[in-house]
Image (cartoon, rainbow, N blue to C red; front, top):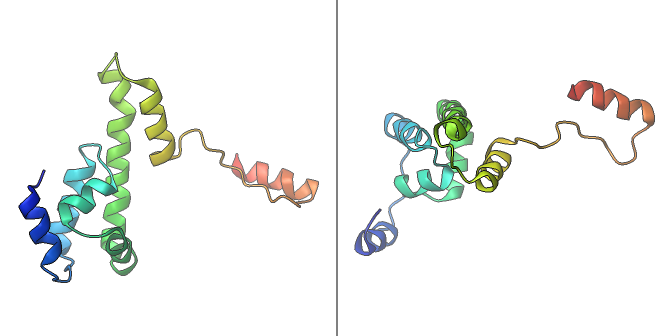
Length: 126
């Protein structure tokens, strides 16, 4: 956690953020391996959400590291119930659904699709 003075200094300095491959990929690993997400990375890196998504588009190695970090975080959350028998299931379930897509339908059917198109969409989803 940063102090109020550090927070004010960080956001009033007016310097553009600079992408540093080693520093930011290491930070991705450190933050996501603790089971945290994008918001924690943004805070640690002192960048905006827009900058983060700009970096994903501009730097392929950063995008690949982000995908790996998501997998690392997902693994930590998947083992959470096994390691914590008295865990909060509704909270865990919400995290798994929103962060990692658990329980979301994998089939997308267009509203006006023909019956054959609907069946094809279902088969592709399987």
